[in-house]
Length: 230
Image (cartoon, rainbow, N blue to C red; front, side, top):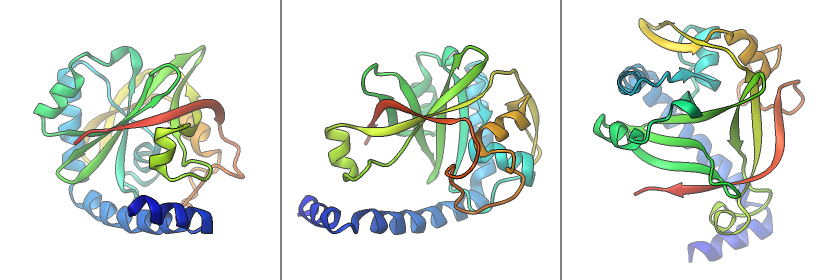
């Protein structure tokens, strides 16, 4: 029944607006949880990554909040961390699970199987972990986009999702203060934020999208897929 309703909504052009409305409601609920318990989750994540000798660093919205707001962005629904592909240990998932982080989803490139993103849940808060790969003088991560017109289940079974590469200057990482917690951030945080959000990143814009701004987010031909865990 659910699949039949979705197909009707897709044909009527209503599927995407309804999904966006549902996601906005979910994001608001998650943002409230983040404001309340986000720092505790970040501390727990940093502890387990440190025990694995992995430098998990702030990226995307979490880095923007730390640099511009000196804290979390009020409407951010989750925490974004990055890890270098070369530092991911074989027992990552087991160690995360033992620390209370439940793996919800993985995004991967269909043609190669390359893992690009994982989502964990910790006390009902979500942690997105992006895999960063070095290419020349840059690192890049892969951003999965919504399908051009299909329901996500059909897209995941068939041709996958469009994706972009988000390039940032390769640099080292150092621990900096974040709300009393010492957490890894890129040494060139300004360069990263300009590459991701454009030179205007210091101006808060709710529901910001890359369209119309000069960023280093590049569309690719890679199709990505999702794997869910119970």
